[in-house]
Image 1 (cartoon, one colour):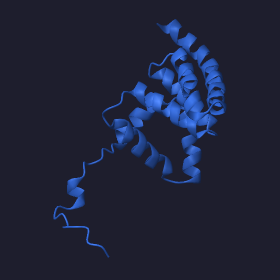
Image 2 (cartoon, one colour; image 1 turned 60 degrees about the horizontal axis):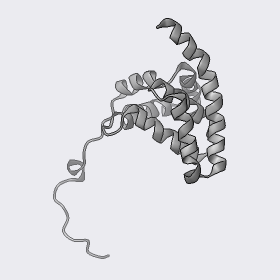
Image 3 (tube, one colour; image 1 turned 180 degrees about the vertical axis):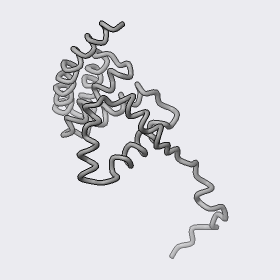
Image 4 (cartoon, rainbow, N blue to C red; image 1 turned 120 degrees about the vertical axis):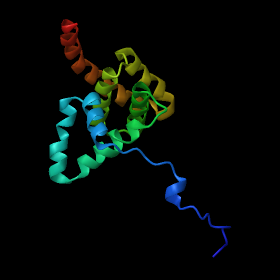
Length: 151
């Protein structure tokens, strides 16, 4: 075995930045970002894979979303791009479009994400994402109109 040099006497756990994993903040963030329709998946998921929904909420919403450096809007742009590039995740992409509106992206900005992605992910994936986004934006329009009556 090759010698990799001197071993650092400080344990690895003391050399790494502690990750934030805040379960309660994860549930609060989930409530802020996801609507009840998106959250309705969790009881089913709990039945299929006990503990997985709590782990997902704690690590994603109570961990990743708590990191500094990106605003909620910027995180949504990344989510839309990643899911579009991945493809085949229409329900998740539709949910992220709705969340994008909740964090302040306009419908025009959401559409522009897919136009911008075309040369990077390919026209077919960008068009597929745009179809999902158009339907999600149409579904969201009546809810937004209802909210404007409350203002």
